[in-house]
Image 1 (cartoon, rainbow, N blue to C red):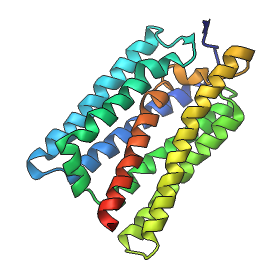
Image 2 (image 1 turned 90 degrees about the vertical axis):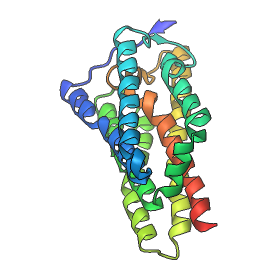
Image 3 (image 1 turned 30 degrees about the vertical axis):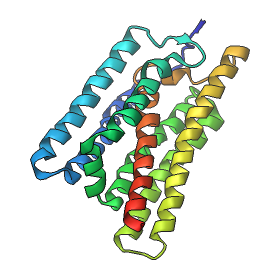
Image 4 (image 1 turned 120 degrees about the horizontal axis):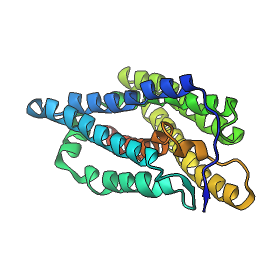
Length: 238
């Protein structure tokens, strides 16, 4: 196994990313709080914040202790963070009574609007500007995230205004957003394999602090949110 390659990322980029990364956590917690029964509003809100706080602390400790520093296939950071987190979401959380209650009570437009946090995808573009990520990968994933984020505003407005095309538009937007995050995950796999075989640039930057939060959080969370929206669409338009 080789070690991760060193790439220069300006300090201001890392600091700005650390400031931005709590955004999705707070938006998700606020969405759950709004849709929770009165007696459980604060419990749900703080439980989500607490879980992500512990999880991000675990990822931080792992990063600073070099747990993700070996270039391996599949990427070690996925084995230590992404896969276990995805398993937790899709085997435990999705079957919880409180999740089903939140899904039932949540407004579809609010579930769509929460994806505004994907403007954080701009960091893919910034990282490729500093030549720390493969250009094609970074531009497709970065702009895909930003398009999903900006479009969520217009999709939510169509839902709120009961436009006749709202259902179809939401399905199209939701599928695009899901395809984008799946492309990101698959591409990271492929680029890691190519990097090991040829020595070309991979996605090593995404295994280093603070950008290790991206693979640790984004793929499972975003896929889970899109699956929840599909479920909600069936409830609303059945």
